[in-house]
Image (cartoon, rainbow, N blue to C red; front, top):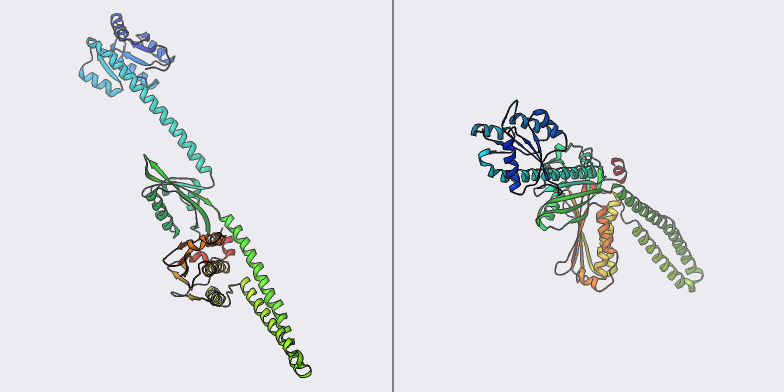
Amino acid sequence: MKKGTGPLRFVLLEDDPNDVELIQLQLAKDGIAVEWRHVVAERDFREALAGAPPDLVLADYTLPGFDGLAALRILLQHSPDIPFIFVSGSLGEERAIEALKSGATDYVLKDRLQRLPAVVMRALMEARERRERREAEAALEEQRVLLSTLIDSLPEIIYAVDTGNRVQVVNKALLDTLSRRRDQVLGRTLAEISSDENVADIEAQAATTMRTGRALTDQERAWISADGSVRWFNFTHVPLRDHGTVSGLVCTVQEVTTRRELEQEILEISNREQRRLGSDLHDGLGQELTGLSLLLKGLEVQLSREAPQYTSQITKITDLLAHAIQSTRSLARGLAPVNLERGGLPEALKHLAARCTDMYSLQCTFGNGGPKLPDLEEGAATHLYRIAQEATTNAARYARAKTIAIDLRSTGRKLQLSIADDGIGLSAGLAQRRPGMGLKIMEYRARMLGGTINFEEPNPGTRIVLSAPLHLLRQSKDKLRRAV
């Protein structure tokens, strides 16, 4: 029962030498090796406790000048975990109950010493279990404090929820983001804590993860703080399991606002450069070619009178020049496809449908049903246009579509862009060519908009659906930077 190989250390508080011998013989007869410290007075008892702590105390209830209850009180103050057993011949039922209520482990009557070994072994075993349980609890508490300190020091948001999506663990980063105290968050759902409209989607995804048991990673979401600022976060949901059953989730959230700003800035630089090139082509080369065309018209009139034999060549040059002007304008329009001052995104998609119809000899239509769309930020509108452009190109070139339908509408607080065709389907189209970057770029642009994009394959054809929150599409880059 004792750590190590040495004998047990017992303190025996007894004034009768004969009883002392009987007690020691009874335990020795059962093979219990004991190193005894026999005491009678209070001072000796205190000294026995002051050295190496004993494994157990045996005490008579009544002693001259000192009694067992006083010894019990001293032991409870000094070492409350050491078992204390009364061994008395004068311990009645009432006194026995009083002793146990006072903290004694057990009692044995002197005329029934044969019970003593079993009582001693049980007391030692219970003391050992209490000690091991206390050590385990202390180790767990140490680990809890360590983990709590660790997660509180991390810049990433970390929290855990139960199967009801109620927060059970939360770190300082989330408390700072929500501007809440820990007691205001624990035991509540995110929907009860935050009014942000994305919380419902986050909790729906969490419920799906708990239902399927499959971790969800790299889900980017925009978070609207209490002051109205917009911050971007990358969510990961990992199931917690109890004997194989999902009992909750550990959720980590990493802020990626700075990265998103840098990516957006790179795209804006590219878009600005494209717009500059488009403007230079339209206002520079396009105007010069137009001026040259006017000069040729005048030359054509003059030659028709003075040298008619050159008229046909001049006509050919004029036609080539007209084609060059048209190509220049098309190229300029392609570099800056969305003009907010001339119809914005709907007008750009309308021109895309017309150009797709002419270029690929198919029927491409654009629909803009539902409520009137709000004015979109130019960068967001360009992302949407490029997604539609990539989708229509894939449908015409690889899916061999005969009809393509582009649809743009607002549904509640979200904007939805869909491109549907009647081709051979996305999977079949990809199987016939080497996969490119088009789909990945569409997914990337959707993430930049804070939305999602789904690739569906109805029979026949393909349907690509992008859904993004309108409040983010209206958010200008400068306003986003100031908010963060």
